[in-house]
Image: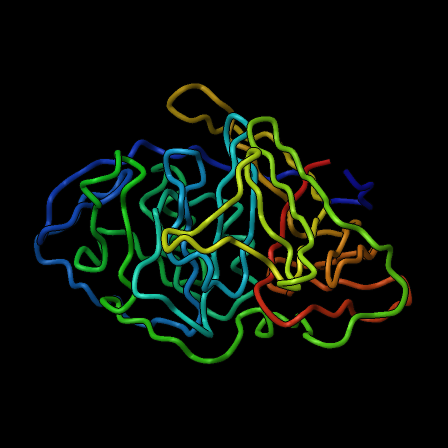
Length: 316
């Protein structure tokens, strides 16, 4: 855990509804969303950035397509569990998932991008107006039923997947991390050699272990090496452990757990892991419409190793 700086007051969040399974053109919709029989598989106004909310409990693993994401955000949700917000632009795989419900935290994170598409399975009804009003292209199964399908070999609700090509959404060759101002360049001076770092939520644990051979941080979740559906080990070129404030909200899930809201507007400390070293940095984001700036101890923007970036939101 790292000590954070001054943060803004917590905002409200929401709890996820259970997924509803309804057949439509051989595929099913997710939580709280009922597909219309004449819904089009193509949603208008797609941006270059595609964000997908990915399930991350044990029955949902291994994920599909996560290794192709430019950015991987990890956030704490109800009952101390974790969910992933994967952001794609440079390389969009044919299948991504399993897809789960959105959170209010996602809306604030995605304000950093210019009109992104958000693929998600549903949301609490009280949050739906906020999703519709957000500056993004909301894409639940009800708006694009032909872009989603369920895998009959996996248990519901951990079996809903997205086919980005049916939105349609294609690769742009432009890294989404660069779109929000992250800089890929040589490492800054200094840093402390480190082989491993662990982040714990009440009901989830992430360990990042440096591999000199792969020159990446190998990901372990809940004590198990993390792999993709193709069998490859999940690995990040850079890992950013960002200290944040996690506040309760008036929303609860169906089991009575309070839905948290993670504050990503404000300022605080962070730890950047790259090239086998740890760097103390600070983060600052003045408004929801601005990008997060990460600054190294020398006062210059923190630089990132070329490749996938994981940003783990670490509650104080």
